[in-house]
Image 1 (cartoon, rainbow over the protein chains, first blue to last red):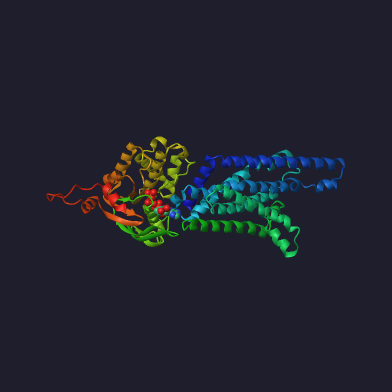
Image 2: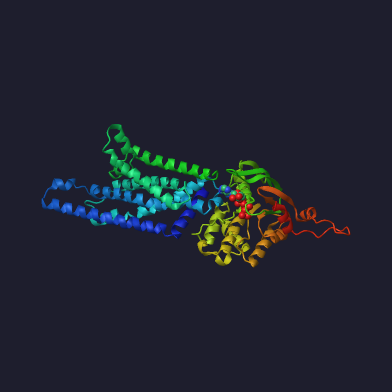
Length: 261
Length: 248
Ligand SMILES: Nc1ncnc2c1ncn2[C@@H]1O[C@H](COP(=O)(O)OP(=O)(O)OP(=O)(O)O)[C@@H](O)[C@H]1O
Ligand SMILES: [Mg+2]
């Protein structure tokens, strides 16, 4: 375990020595803020309109949580699809290309520790990126006072869902990075795979019966949505956790097998 | 200390290493010679466990490299042909990391890093980013990395490549000073280096061992014909022996 921590520290050292981490944080926050401000603007207009028509029942139905945060988390989830390939692309591929993997193979570190250390490092980047966006609910909370304030339970569940989804995406990215020596190839394939988990949900509407349920289950975004609605189901957690476990296991095998090539 | 027996490595139809067998005793420095493509790097990678052999076995300190890999890794310091450096890290951060994964205790880590940096003359550029260093400087960082945690066995693949004349002499002195306590296998194309540092010479050519002897032993075997008045001819240089054995 201490070896995994050492590897994680090394990866973080490299993330912050190169612009990758900073560029990712900036992109995440800038695009996230854009969506947040647009959602906020739309909400404001809607509530003004309802107020003008003096329809209190409409007013009540306009749920702040649904209007802003549920949509915001959906949008942040999509941004993750675009930035995670760039975070995971170099993790194993670059070690192979630069032959630094020979150093790891000749020191008393197991493949499992290598994989775990690398995974922990990118999870840390994910946590920081998500923490930066906590400013949105905090801003709303400060301005709203206590009436119509933030439903923190749903917001935090939404963050939990985003974290699990990002973690699953990273496990996929890490695995793909362990299959090639080229960072560009790793990033491209990861991006396509992540995009597939998103757009496969669109085809669900065309299908029927169990196929429809199955396709919906495969789509990552549907699982994220149940978190931000505040209605977490065990099946959503199982979905993300099984992707993580599978991804890490497969990466471990790929790192072990690389020596035999 | 190192026992290599009947080692074979084939890449598809190319036999890179064919039935190589040799031993290195504790405290010995073995010079590992051979023309380009002879299989030196391939053999060294199999000794360190980076590359699995097609057949044959390697034991380091009595442990089989593939049955007890952890025991072997704890005892080995390896400088590969391309120094395994993270170009985005500073020399100090890199050496600290290697010390950590080699299991150097936190309390000794700094002093251990300083020690190897001094031994390899990395002191002046220890705060710089590895990607900005010159080839020779990087080679020295690679050597420093191999020396970390004071391993019993050192496998050095062309340790002096890219170094300036003064550094070559210093690295030679360093390697000589490590003899006795450490067992060293070093490959090189600089024959005077072998004469200066190694007790034994192993020459391979096209994957096969063609000579395994002390320098004096080699000179005796390959001495020229007796001169007219019955005295032995002049002792051949290592260069002459090398060319004779590898030209076939
Ligand atoms: N990964 C590989 N795939 C196929 N062939 C390889 C591979 N690695 C090495 N070889 C071949 O194996 C042979 C031995 O290579 P090796 O690198 O061991 O030579 P060397 O003695 O270290 O040479 P040099 O003095 O140039 O460093 C060469 O013919 C090389 O082309
Ligand atoms: Mg070589």
